[in-house]
Image (tube, rainbow, N blue to C red; front, side, top):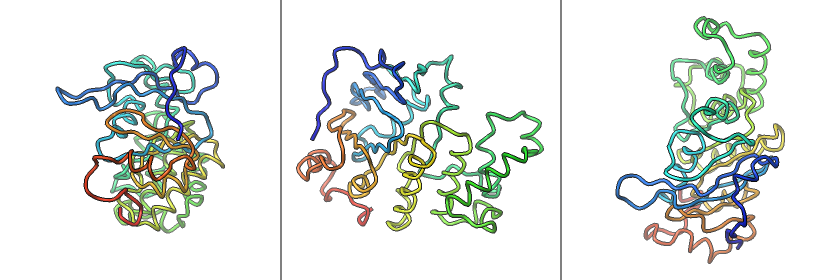
Length: 273
């Protein structure tokens, strides 16, 4: 197991050195409770599939929401591709991010294809959005991405509410890709899926790294899936980084320690999810 090492200079000062993501001393508390993030620091390279592993309440969601600019920090700095996450730079940073949600985040009344095209909204004029007058190259890219994630033409033209959970998450991945992000943030993207479907979704996220050169930062609580798909695992417990290394270094003892105090159940796996 590789424990987080002390650094002689802040991670933020290294952000211009080609880092995909740098988080330096992130602290966040809600009310009088214990910190949701207690000084989390790490650097992420691209392309790489990094899993945030930990039990419920370990700080995974707060960390992802902070990187997306959805949660204000009490302390710390975040840089995405060398750009500091500030109020002034929020739009610039978000254009470099793709979001994959646990609850899919689709508009039920729109078709799968329309949901994917909606992912390009930040780059289109309001009139094109109002009349859904998407440029032909963008429509072609949406069709290509839907095929890439395994949906047929018939499924692409179905309303989102008519799709299964696995199909809806495939649409979510295609929608995130259409904006050509540099970093995916995926918050428990397979929590609501059966084990076989979950494996298919994580394989698609893995392909985003190898095919599209997108870095992936994905929160999970299933250790077997994390070890199967991740290049790197960052373990969080009580808002603190307690493990950082390749899956091969996550020993049974380290895993048990990571989930200590999470309840009486055994360490979570995909078959128990």
